[in-house]
Image (cartoon, rainbow, N blue to C red; front, side):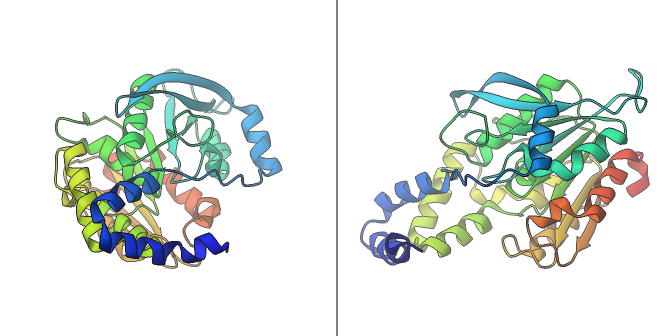
Length: 301
């Protein structure tokens, strides 16, 4: 850890006490700035990217024009016809990208799905410098509308949070989108919980948190407490699968349990020993999600 990072939390704690208003602006900028992790790309991911049909679509997120990167892998030969074609849309989490779903693409194709994955605003090959739940949700809505039909919407972590609001909508901000089924993997429940963990980690005070929640209310037209995945799922009847690992160190398992108990249209699949990110490569999880996506809606009621 650099000297700067070691002393950053104490500096932010002092700044939060002296000037919480100014520090709220710093917190908001930090919270909405995904890092370029420059992680190594595996040979499997390179092959997947090379095999994709790519497309860039111009959209507006929070008033800013950006180009959204889409990757498409058609269903495997002989698995689908124009009358039975299905589309799966994959949405990555914070500081992720479309290739996070490398373990899902081929099994989905073999199950007869046309597979589409996106890079969210300020992530991967999409443009933009800032991202947040509203921008990610707007990108998902734009992709759904561009595709015209999404039979299975899969979101991981922050992406799952945004998927829930793309389907449920936000009054006067986001129109609810129609999808066949929804799968949320390692998704948090509340915005307040996510930001509180961030604030504690980097050193922002409760006074800064309260100012951030007021910003969220001004941006989304609802109190920060409104932005709960559980509450969003309670407003829809879309068959939903929630998958969460007991050993997730980033999003507490209790939040997965809460989301998974949102209603009779929601099924909960707990796992163990996978954590927050390896869960996306676990064969059991891939199989469970794809099996869920392939069944009739009544099967999970």
